[in-house]
Length: 331
Image (cartoon, rainbow, N blue to C red):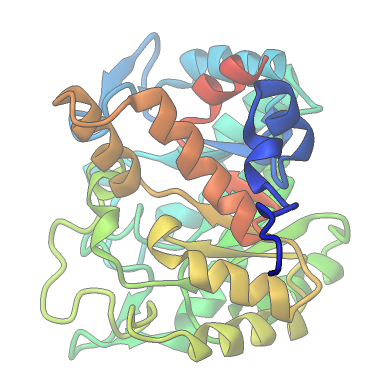
C-alpha cells in the first residue's frame, strides 16, 4: 500500500507573514514610478476644484509652484502640465498653442526657474486651444486634416522646448507627428529633449473629467475623436502604432487609458525594448473615488492595487492623479 503524503510544496508559506510577503513581492511601487498631472489656469492665488475629480483642481502659476515643491519633496521625478485656456483665446486653428507667451510656456519657465531638477512633461495637441475641441485642424467638411495639423504641432513642440520642457508628449494621434517633431528638435539644437509618444491612445469614454478640467471637447459631435484615436476593439493595431513611433524617434511610449488596457501595456513591453508608460486617466481616478465615497471600496487599498497592476503589466512608470498621496504613503 502506497503511503500518501501531503504536498511538500506549500505555496502559502511565503504568504504567511508580512515580512516574507514583502521579500518575495515580484513588483513594488516607488515615488520614482510616478508622473503627476497638474492643471494650470490664468490668474494669481487661484485654486479651482474640479467637481468630477475629487481632490484635483486647477492652479494659477503661483499655486503651481507650491505643487512643484511638493513633488520634489516627495521624490516624484516629473510633473505633466495641462492648461485651461481662456475661451477668448480659443480659435478654429488653435494658434494660441504656438504663442511663446501662452499659459503653459509661462508655467514651464516658472517651474524650471524654481526647481530645475524637476522633470516637466508637456502635451502636444491642439484640443486645449481650439474652439471645436479637436486635437487637429478641420477642413470645410469637419474632417481632421493630418499633415497641416502636424505642421502646427511641430511649432507647438518648438515653443515648449524653448520654454524649457524636458519631455514632449504628442497626444494628438496624427500620423507622422513623432518623426516631424524629432526632426525639428534635432535641427533646432534640442537633441536632449525627449519624446514620450501617446502611441496607443484609445477613443475612450474614460476621458470625460479631464475634458471638464481643461475645457475641451464639449462641442465634439459625430464620430468625436474616433477618426484619429484608436478603436477600443483593437490590440494588434496598437503594436503597429508603437512600432511606427519608435521608428520615428520616440524615446518612450504611452498607453492611454490605463486599467482597461493592461493587456496592451503588457503586449507593448513584451514586444519592444522601450520604456512604456501608463496613464491612469481622469475617469479611472473619478470612478475609484466615487466608489470609495459611497463606502463601496477601500480607497487606500484600491489606489495601491490599481497602481501595482500597471507595474505588474510591465509599465516603466505611471501618470496618475494619486501620485502625491501614494508617494506620501510610500514614504
